Length: 367
Ligand SMILES: Cc1ncc(COP(=O)(O)O)c(C=O)c1O
Image (cartoon, rainbow, N blue to C red; front, side, top):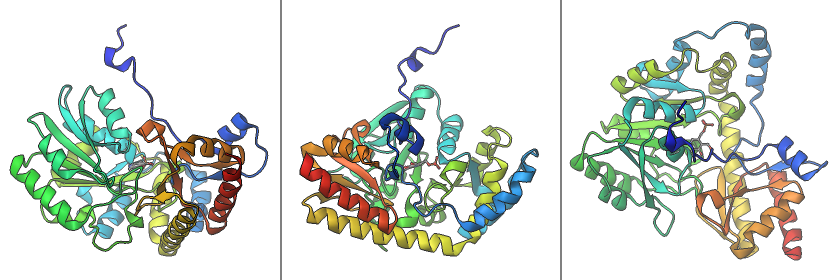
């Protein structure tokens, strides 16, 4: 047996801890508040719970293999053809399909540094080279530097938009200049616009990737049910792209890659417009509230259009993180992203956000 040498030092993706893990690690018996994984604070849609209770009686069956119905509903939502939709076991799985379909060992992708870690993790697994382009000073993607790094080996550019972990976004004009310039450098490079958090965009000048797909650019849009739709535990994501690519990606997936419960829950939550609207409202209000309160305490909060904010806690960030954790308040450390003074906070319910601010005030007296 010879394990591929480049896999020997692979570091797995550092996931946010679950409530059970924290309870066990820190021996906390009280309530635990999760501000660490950008999940939906409302809990699942009641329509989803209803549908899943019935669907439990069917779990001895395989799901319908082509996912015809879910693709049809998504296609209607985006006004594209069902053959342009790719479904995955979370959008993470679709990132892997992109590698399977488009990248050979030794070829290259471009990502921002930092950005969502799965792009480079997947590149390591597939022996693909990663060019990392530092964000600009305002923590937005540096489009002109990215263009400057394009080479003959570049096959995909990954842009998480809103960006994880900063929440930054770019205006329509910046996108247009970027996509047009890339087109003139090499029209065969695929731009993956990862819109895991796009439902939370408030600023009307921030475009959605679908506009560019429809305008004819070579784009792959990644979307997830894990955030605004509250289905993180069921693992459901999708991509929208040109038919040619979507059809091949549909062939590289495992049969039944999306499980029966995920399909049924996805269909149910897409119909629950009230749940989505409520989620978006809670996030927008919570984002404003936390920004205001954190700024009052003297911390810098970076502009975010996502369901989280990144906050500069200075040199005390690690201490604040640990002290809050001991109180059962989990934030996300950004050390894995190279940010030592910053923490990421997922927006919670109004009462949870208040508890966070109150606990932070207590902690600040101690550190
Ligand atoms: C930018 C970004 N893309 C994709 C994902 C993956 O989401 P999923 O749960 O659909 O795999 C995440 C999850 O945190 C993310 O932050």
